[in-house]
Every structure is written in C-alpha cells, then in structure tokens.
Image 1 (cartoon, rainbow, N blue to C red):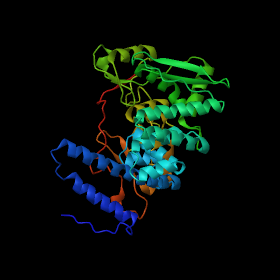
Image 2: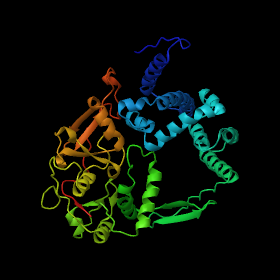
Image 3: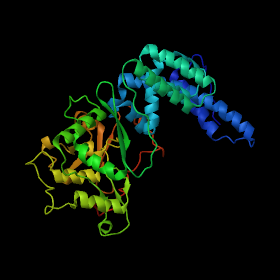
Image 4: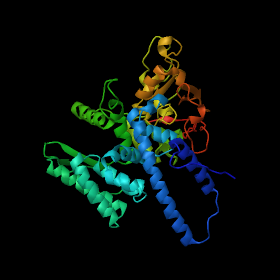
Length: 427
C-alpha cells in the first residue's frame, strides 16, 4: 500500500510530479465499476485531469525548447527529444511543440486549459491555426476559435475554421491562398500548380510508391545540406534540388529497390524501398527495366568496397550499399532518412583507425555526425545481430543513468531486425 503525504501549496514541482506518478500507478491497477454510466463519468473527469497535465507538460517542453537542453543529450531538436525519450510519434510530437511555442501568445487558451475547461485537442487546434499569424491577428483568431469550441463545434471543424481564418488573413495581406487538398485515389500520381500573385506557384499533389522512389532517387542526394552553414530547411533544399534537375534536363534516375532475385525472375514476392515501404512485384520489375539493375555485393569484382586509408571519401558503390543497409541515421531514435545522411567513418578516418572500408562505415545525419566527433564520450557504438552499427547517445557527465530515454518496454530496445533478409538486389 502506497501512501502520499504532501502539502500541495508548498510542494516543489518535482514532488508534485512524483505524487502524480504514484496516483497514476494506483489508478492503473484499480478495478473499474461495471456501470457504463459510472465509467463514462470517471473517464470525463480523468480526461480533464490529463488536459491539465498536458498544460504543465507544454510549459516544461517550452523551457527545454528555449534552452536547447536536448542537444546536450545528443538530440538535434525538441521534436526528436519527444520522439526518442517520451515515445511520441511524429504528429503528436509536432503538436506538443507547436502548443508549447504558441501558449505564451494564447492567454485565454492557457487560462482555460490550466483550469481543466479546455481539452488538449481544442488547444492544439487553436495553436496550430495561429502559428503563422501576427500577434494582433492571433488574438482575434483565438477568440473566434474558442467561441466556436464553446458552441459545441467539433475539433475537426474548428481546425477547418482556423484554416479559413489563415487563408483570409493571407488574402488581406496580399499573399495568395494555397490550393485545397483534392481527394483522389491512391494508384495514380497527381500534381497541381496554382499561380500566386507574385508570379510563383503553389505545388500540391500525391505520388504513388513507384513515383516516390523515382523522386527520392532523383532529388534525395541533391537535397542534402551544402555545409555546416547551410541554414535552409529540407523543404527549401528540396525545391532547390528540383530546380537543379529541371535546369539540367532529363538524366537517368537512380532508384534503389531491394528485392530477391526470384522477384525479378517473375515471382510475386514484393520488394522494398529504402524506408521499408513495400513495392509490388510488377512495379519492381518495371523499375528494373527503367532504371537498370546492379547487384549490391560485398566484393571487389562488382564495386570497389575496400579503399583503405588512401581515399577518405566513400565511393558511389559503397554509398549505395550503405543506403540499402541503413534506412535511417545509425543513431538510435534518429529518423533522418539514410539517403540524406553522411557517410561516417566509425572510428574516425583522421586517426588512421577507420579505413574507408564498408565494414568500417555507417550512415549518420549531419547533425549527429558533428555531435559524435565533438562528444565522443557520449556516443556508444555497437553492432546488431546483422553486423550493422548502432549508435546510442549517452547522458551528459554527472547525470544519473536512470534518466535515460524511456522505451515502451521499460528497457532499451534491442537493435531492430533487418526486414529484407540476407540476399538483395538493388534496381
């Protein structure tokens, strides 16, 4: 039996968090009443408590975001921290970061959420709607959206109203409204171009997996940061890569598809893109005809995999092998796609301990590659059961090991299994 004795008025934030954790533990193991009406009432009350907890969590996230503390733990952004250490999916992490950053501008949302009178769903919807508005328009939009919520409008419709407010403000300020999404099937790719008032274009559309593979193979390597001083985000770099390709005219496209030899010979077994997306067998064979087939074999007769210390930069063939092996950055929890990562000498090429050989190379995103070499004591390197390198970031000096990231299983995960098996061909 666990007992809690705390003066709520004088207890520290840490003590309150511990008390809340103890209460939640007991609540999780309590038997529930058989009455549906009673459970509905209890669930609604508990949801209000959770919403108040989300307000407190948003305030804490804001401090971490403002101070950049996550970078001391080897995490490049606040969203990465929420994904890796709090187990949030991308959409949920982005929602929490947006709420944390917008709450200082949303006085009424903060007041109602702290009192338990506004749900996280509505609060996050308002925060998302106002993040591109100035302070004056933000205050007006907040009132309109909260009034709509209080009138019983569902959160999805409040979000739609928020988009209309943003579009109206954009039109009044002289910027063109972006085109609305068009509902289409998921077999045929489509793109639309809408001219803006300043002569530019809004691009909207959807690409099926086959065309996505071609797009990644064409633009992926061109969209990487130009250097440490490149401040462009991924969207800006991708646009520049597209312009580069269009200005050069059409050239052969490199597409990496992992498949068994039997698939190319007519079997129905699917192939995979580098991110693990399945590609139907007929699309694999069509891509093989369009892009050509080259085997990714760890041997000197096909591609120069072993270059020793005479060459520092990995060969094109080595990079293709690494991109096939590493779907994402080698750092556990980092989700930067492998084709946007840098080739990393595991033991450091400059020290002469890591030759440019395929078994001494891994893919690492630019941010973690630099962090690895500036914080070597905080990077643990091991191999999984398939011989691939796994990087793990360690806590800063003096921080208890028990504060490491929380995983769904309550322990650090084992390296992931390779979904592609032992024998692959890349088309």
